[in-house]
Structure formats: C-alpha cells, structure tokens
Image (cartoon, rainbow, N blue to C red; front, side):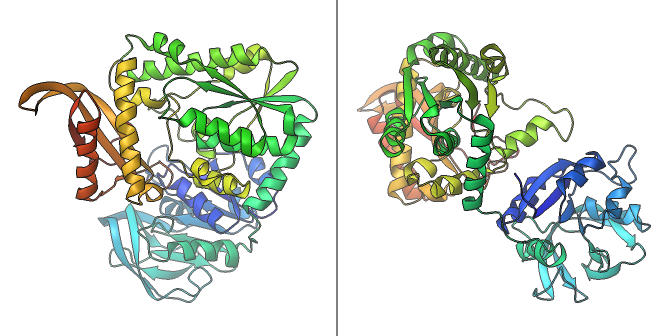
Length: 513
C-alpha cells in the first residue's frame, strides 16, 4: 500500500496490540504492526510518521526481556510508549523502572498535571485502564511528568522537543475514558499524520495494484459463502472483470439457504463468473467416524483443496489464486510472539499453489474484519452479504460436537435457522458478533405428550465482540431465550433440551470446536 501517512506499531507481546493499530486506522491513518525486533532498515523503509511501542507481559529487568534497537530513538520520528513500551522507553533513555509496591490492574483515576499535545482538549481527570506490575521511578532526561494516579506517581511523561510520549495505562481499550482522543492527538498533533486512509482510497489503490500485478492473466477465487471471500472476489472482479472465475464449493456444511443466496447475489448483482460445485456427499463421506475437532478441520480443509483443484483444473491459462486473507491472519502467520499452541487450523493453500503453479492475490491482507465490511459497502454489496455474522470455514461441522452425519446436520441446521430468525425478529442481529446453535454429543431425558423421551441437547451461543480476538457472552433477553428454546424443542424433531452458553473468550473460544 503506497501511502505516505503511516504509523508503525512495534509489538512487544500485548494482547491489545491489534487494538492499537485499529484505533489509529479509525483516525483514517494507515497503521501496520511489526515485531519489536524487526530490522531497523525495515522501519526506515516503512517511513512512519510516528511509532508506537506496545505493552507486553515482560519486565524490562527480566532475563531475555524484549528490547528495542536504540537507533529507533535517533530516527527523528515521534514515539509513543504504552505500558511496557513506556517502561522500555524510560529504561533505554536513562530513567529508572522498579517493581511497584502494589500492582495496578483494572480501572484507575488519572490526574493530568501539565498542558501538552497528547492531552490537548481532554479534561483534567480520567478513568483509565491499567495492567502493570512495574512503574517509573525516575523519568529520563528531557522528559516532564504529565499525569499521575494514586499508585503511579509517574503515569504519563513527555519530551515535547523530540515528540516522545509514554503512558502507563492503555488508551487503546474501551475502558479508558477519552483513550481514542489521546491516540488521535498522537497521530494528528504529535506525528502530524494526515487522515488519508479511507475505503474509497483503498478501493482505487487496490484495483490499480491488482491490475498491475495480474495484467491480462486469469485469476481463480474460491468462494466459501462468508464475508471475506465474497468481498475479495468482488474487489478483484472490479479490477479485472471476466478474467476472474469464482468457484463456489458447497460442502454441505453451510447454513440453510446460504449457498443459493451468495450465488444469486454475486451472479445477478455483479455479473460474476461463478462455478458452483455440490460436494456435500463427498465431504460427508470423508467426515464419517471423525470426532476430533482438529482432525475435522484438516479433513474439511484438505477436501476443499481437492474439490477446488479438480474444478480449477478445468480452467485454462489460470495464473493467480485470489483469497480473502485478513490482516489478523497475516499477523498470526508471521508469529511475532514466537511459537504458540495450535488453537485451530485453517485452509492451507500452499500445496495447491505449488501443484497448480499459481501466484497468490490477497487484496484484503491489510484489513481488519470491520474494515472488510466497510469495503463491501463501498463496493455496493448488499447488507445481507456484508453484515452477515462470521461463519467458520469448516461450517456447521465444528458446531456438531462429535461425528458429523446427515441426520445431525439437519437437526443443527433447523435449530440454527430458528436462532437467527428470532434474533433478527428481535432486532439484535446486527448488534451481536455471532449467534448460533451447537449440537451437543449428549442426550437427556424429557417428557413430550406424557411420554418419556431421550433426545439431543442444543446449546445457544451468542457473543459480543469487535474483531473476534476477545468476546463476551451476550445478555439476551429472557423472553427471547424462551422463544428460541420453545421453537427448537417444538419444531426440531430429535431435540428435547436447550441450554445457554455464558462463557467468554478468553478462556473459552467462540466456537465450541
């Protein structure tokens, strides 16, 4: 993305790093995340107008604590340190960091003590979000104390001359009052970045980039029925027209009526070339006897590749594969934070690219999920596509705990339809990140028509989130829960009990598998 107005976020392992980048982009300034130990030449090539040092779990005095290349402070670029980033800045520039007498987690009262660009236009006392065990005991030379809390005498510092600022609290989280305004001040007033990052500019720049890279060669794109692949396909089609062919693989694991809805929308509204493949029986055969969640995902991902490859092989002169990779996927794949346990697998197209000798086109790789929806709206896509709640690649298979069969799919599909119908009727669909049904691997005793039953249990899952990285269970009205439960038990043969999932992420994941 050829933009001059950019802010760089250096990641030290904070769970909130992506939020920092998102908040900066909300200021209509492009932001990118790089690992803290990225080579200095990469930072120079990026040409940031400002740099943010994220928080992190370490102490600057830990053995092997992540440190910054000291030359970053010699680039003549404004720097904002947050939490660990503040402590690191103080430590490396000659200040003193020490263990706090009391660790500070959660909300705290912040008093602003000095007028400065970072707190311009912001009231003198705020509620902020703290998460630290160390604190600044002595500011580096050239810095003044800007704000304090009861437990942190130095909660914000600044060197106006160099444009260096540091905060002990997290302005990027929703719990910090006026946090977005503080970040906006750093972006506009300190870094002097201009708000040029808009979806309109992204569309034009992306189309130019796609045309430059692809030329007159042909592109194939896999459509899953989700928002990301649909928006990616429309954007590529806007750039190269009928040189794009989409392949929609119906794996039989989609929600009721979803395959036809997506196909009709893209064909009729955007005049796109789409090949639809009904591979539902093929996927069911492969899933027979499979109960392990990770194995399910791999079976579905591998079979998707095979079906897609079979169909794509019928096309002539294809040179590129387009897919809807998002920025969080890019961040995870780079593994900034080192090795981590596998939480869930995703489609791996590496083997496909190699066998078919295709190059990859990922037009959404710089976007977060909410930005993809904005992009879809900019492209004129209907709300029923771009506002669709996130749906996992393996589909309903990972919402069936245990073996996936045709009968169990039918039960879940009907139950899930009822959940969505009632949530929409209550006017809550667009307010929730996700709402869906899960078919559990247990049966329970019930009574229907004076007869004993021993049938399936369905769990309801509804969560609120911004990007799926964290989520809280949604407090659905009791009347709505009662209506959903009553309809499922009465209308879905084979279910006699409905339960409601009230766990948040973390520690739970949004999906059950």
